[in-house]
Image (tube, rainbow, N blue to C red; front, side, top):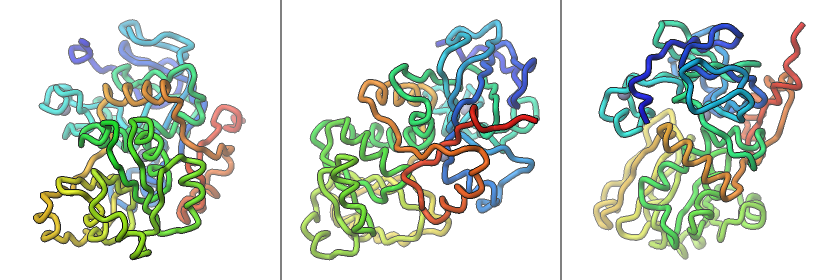
Length: 344
Ligand SMILES: [Zn+2]
Ligand SMILES: [Zn+2]
């Protein structure tokens, strides 16, 4: 380990010559478009700072390393996800949970240690402290691995933490979008029986035939839902729109867990009685620490898990954002930064 003792001297924004002694500079090849990019550019969470360069699903090739960097060398395939800094001395940091550090620094729109703004991956270059850089396994294509750095770890971490990664678990996945489709893949790779729960019957074929889910439930179909009552060990709920928790609680076995990873902007109604009756749990989870993020991407490499992506040129980003707002993407847009970011 030993990362904790190191200083932090880097400068986040792209461009040569700013690589600090613990920093890794890389040429950005691809960057995924996460739903939170859309929220951030529109300031829908009320905490955006401008000018903003969004993007926290960033992959590329190392071009320069600082003289104290030990984990990476020029030419390595690397990525940066949602975080570029943390305090490295709190309880969470000491447990490799930088993602829950109160001083955690977001990859874009955050304030770096030196007071400068952080800028994300819709850019031709990236600099980050090596602690926040992950190695991308050789067998994973860079475009399809970019979304794993946010969407992938967002679902991997709760599956592990809440005991749903044991083989033989019955895991429900609510919502089949950027998060949901990788949740199905990770849960299957852990050896779970996976049921997708969706409002849209049209997604059944996709879920079962393409993504490999074992079964599919239309949430509005009472009969289907009834047949699965009390069968699930856990549910990963990726939906960020308003929705009712009651039918989902009904799907759980006793001691079952619903893990919320979407972020509804208004509070949901919480039916307490059915929770008490089965000692059931509703919980949350937010991305993962750096150690676990590396573990997730290594696991993805080993099991050949990749996101399903629609690769787009930089000039298409505004259109992609409009389509994303309508959930019209299968399942993640990824910007081909290297080939389409034109420099005049
Ligand atoms: Zn994200
Ligand atoms: Zn901390």
